[in-house]
Length: 329
Ligand SMILES: C[S@@+](CC[C@H](N)C(=O)[O-])C[C@H]1O[C@@H](n2cnc3c(N)ncnc32)[C@H](O)[C@@H]1O
Figure 1 (cartoon, rainbow, N blue to C red):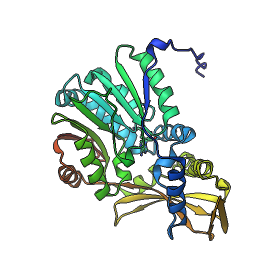
Figure 2: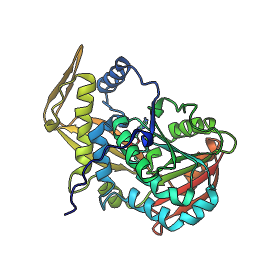
Figure 3: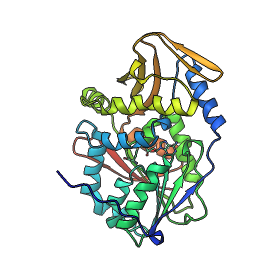
Figure 4: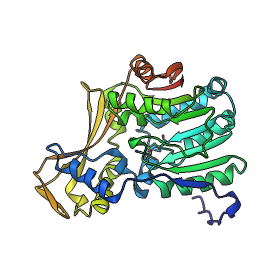
């Protein structure tokens, strides 16, 4: 077993700067959560997965054999590193959207040699520790953390250089948006860069249903824990009395919509209470927590064009399970 590393305090000189952009008020968050829970088909937006434990659980999901998006995307990065670097060029301002543990971006630094790395994430404490490790490994790189909910619009602080922005959106996170919302999101990104902006985006492709279902319902139960943890997070934000043990994880591929749906299903009749309201769930009733849309390469290229991006390259793995697109503004 590997010995645990002794934590070392980083000198202040190499601590990366973290800018917290304006967050929605606690009242707005509670109103959004209550509206979702009181809807006839209850929902919780997937951004609420990512409290600190949720971010760790997602990192654990990416280590699972069943979770093909991460593995196949990593395979593309490894095999096509030279082509990607030639297409993108050096000295970009590398803007990592939903950076998480920043591991994917970091693996590309050697090939892409960015001039600045700006990591955006809603899960700020997790981002802070990831960036502190990263700065130690890359002491000469200008690193900036940005705490922000970009679902409400992306606004980058003045410290992020305006020219040569490369928006990096890996892991098929774009699949959490319905296709029409994805166009709006990518269009906003387009507006957030200069005429020389570029986009490097990973997209999970339509494939065998058994492979898709296994990716979101692993036998170890890591994805189930990730899904159920949202109730702990929402419980804290809304002061709601969710009992996690009363909910089970459900993940299904809906072929007509070409999306994986994740739900939490009540194992008994449950009443959830929070200040000023309550919601009764009958046994078997569900809360919809995530969609993950899958695409065909040509459909996604169309979507990019509709959002104002010009697809330049697409790289697939050998089984055509995942696509990495490079697009220009
Ligand atoms: C599916 S994980 C991907 C992490 C990493 N980029 C990867 O590909 O492995 C999504 C990441 O986006 C962040 N995120 C989700 N919704 C967000 C939002 N609305 N605004 C900012 N960050 C968000 C999460 O905290 C999480 O780190």
